[in-house]
Length: 270
Image (cartoon, rainbow, N blue to C red; front, side, top):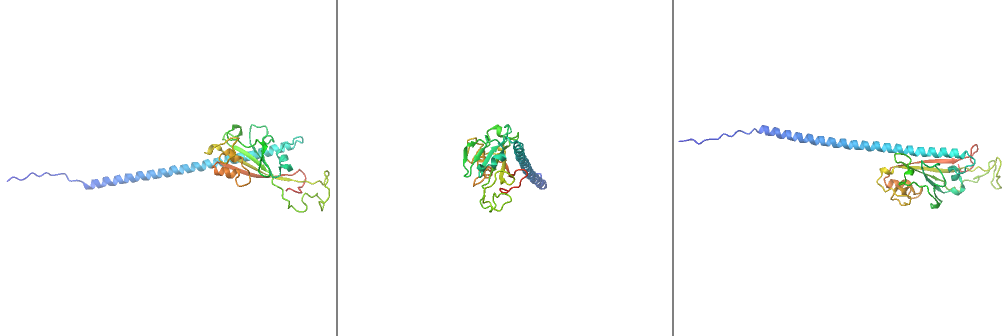
C-alpha cells in the first residue's frame, strides 16, 4: 500500500510581519509630526514677519509725521521773523475769519513752501468746503504728493476752535483795569493782547500697503483713500475713521499751538 505524498509549506514568520507594521506606523507618525512642526514654524515665521513689518511701518509713519511738524514749525518761525511776509500759517490761523475753520494741505517736498494759501483746502464753521480754496488735499495718484521713496503720503490739517462766550467778565479785558465798559486803547502798553489757539493734525499713510482704491483729485466718497483724506476732523466720519474702515496703514499725531506775541502775557485765548 502506497503512502500519499505530502507537501511541506514554509512556515510564515508572523513576528516579522508584526515588526514591519510597527515600523510603518512609526514612520507615518514621524512624518505627521514633522509636518505639524513645519506648519507651526511657518506660521510662527509669518507672524514674526508681520510683527516686524508692522513695527517698521509704524516707525516710518511716525518719522514722516514728526518731520512734517518740525518742518512746518521751522518754516513758520523763519517767515514770521520777516515783517513784510504775512503768508504764514500762524498768521493765517490767527485771523478772526478762521474761527471754526479747518485748513488742510499736503506735504509736497517739491514745493517751495510747505504752507501756501494758494495750495490749501479750507472748510468753514458749517464744515462746507470753500470752492476757491480746494487745492490742498493729497492725491494718491500724483507722484509729487509723496514725501519719500517709501511711498509715504502726509497731509496736515489745522483747526481753529470756535471761541466760547462764557469766559468770564474779564474776557478780552485791558490789563490792569476792573471793567471793560470803556473804549480800549489801540496803541501803548495796555492794549488788549488776544492769543489764539489752534490744533494741528498730521496724518501719514502708505497706500501701497492697502488693497483699497486710491481714488484721485475728484474723489470725495469714503470708498477711496483720496476720499478719506478729504473728510473732516470732526463729526461722524473723520479722516481717521475712514482710513480705519478701509484698512489703510496710517498714523495721526496731534499738536496744540498757541499764538502768543513775544514778551507779553495772554489775556484771552490761552
